[in-house]
Each structure stands twice: as structure tokens, then as C-alpha cells.
View (cartoon, rainbow, N blue to C red):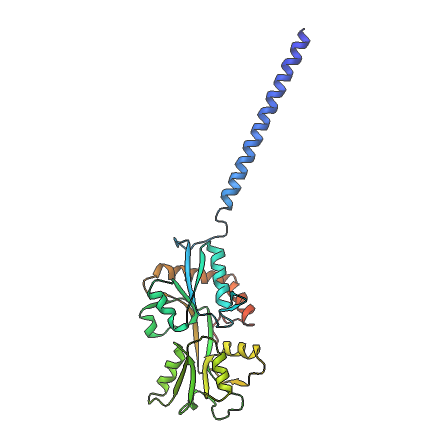
Length: 283
């Protein structure tokens, strides 16, 4: 009888110990899972102080290789920058499309938070808008037909018809060079160079004002395009643009761009789309 009682007591002790042991492991496991879950929340995200779930970015598609559509998908240099922003901050990026000439109006009307279209700062623009630190550097150049030997530089445009995109600040620069109105401008509403270069080849216009990078990309895409690019008459910066009141957003965007430069991501995006690093200023 005593032996039987001892056996029963031993069994009870062992069961109690086993239950306690299982309970302790479960608690430890749950705690570890909770800690891991909490540690994972927001991992690798940085909102740069922005309290927003969505940011609306305005652009003008057709500006290859910076922003253009292919099979219904928006892609390009600027688009990849904003993909990085969305991934790093967790803030959704929504795109708003319009012609280049209407982009700043979307900021003024509150329909967009940022413009991403390789826009360069000017004194007039900076009166109403904030320009980010540069995301690219490019040359402003004159493009002529391959067999045109008369126009050697921007100084040879007197009496000529020159194609330019609506809102392109290169036109203002050339107008200041020819204060007597010696140059006639043909304005194109599309950001793409296709129509301008076609008119150039067929002699409808004498020259085109364009970014050197964009022109080289257009020539690469169409090897039958018989045009040549003259030496740049100035170098400019491509920036992101925000309304003058959006100082907090501008600070956050510049901090984000600084991170992209520091970790080499901006250079990688440039190499991917351009084949060289245009995120650094030309010497």
C-alpha cells in the first residue's frame, strides 16, 4: 500500500513539473514571437517626419528615359526614385499626369504634392515653388539635321525657326540671347522629342532645344534618325518641385535624396536608365 501511494505521488509530481515546463516554454515562445513581430513593424522604414499615408506626384509621361509609359506601366529614372521612396517610407505614391506646361498648376491647385519631371529652377519659378536638391545634371543643347552645317552653336540661330517644348526654360535663355526677337519658336505641348525631331528631319523647323541626355536616348531608340547634337550651351539641374508652402515636405524629400546618394542607390538608378551617372555635377 505504501509503495502504491509513493508511486502515485511520484506520478503527480512528474505531471506537475511537465505541465509547468510546457507552460514556461509556451510563454517564452509567445514573448519571443511578440518581440520579433514588434521589431519587424516599421523595419527599414523612415518617413522622414512626414505624417501622411499617400503622396501625389505629378509628371508628364513621354519623357523617356525619365518618365514614360510602356504597356500601360509608368517607368523611368524619376519613377524608380519614387519607387524607392514608397518602399523606404511606406507612404503610397500616386501619380497624376498632365502636359509639362500644366505641372506647376497642379501644385498651385493642391492636386499634387510634388512634380517629378526633371524641371530646372529659374528665378521666376522659385518665387512660388521650392526646388529640391538636384536629382540629375544635364546639358542644354541645340539639335540640328545631320546635314546642317550652317548652325554650329546656339549663336547661329538668328533668323531660324526653333522647336521647343512648352514651358522649357531653355527657350527663355535663348530669348535673352536674342533680345530683338531674331529667333522664331515653334512650341510643342508634348514632352517627348518625337514630333520635334521628325519636323527637324523634314525641314519644317531648323533646330530643336533639348536636353543632351534625352536626345541621345531618342537617337539610340531610332538609329535612322538623321540628327546631330551640338555642344551644350549651358548645364542645368533636374529637380523635384513643391509648392512654396511645403517646407516640411521639401526637407523630407531632400533628406530622402541624401540617403539615396549616400548609399549609392541614385547612382545605380542613373546607370540603369542612362548608362552613366548623371546624379553628379559635371566638372
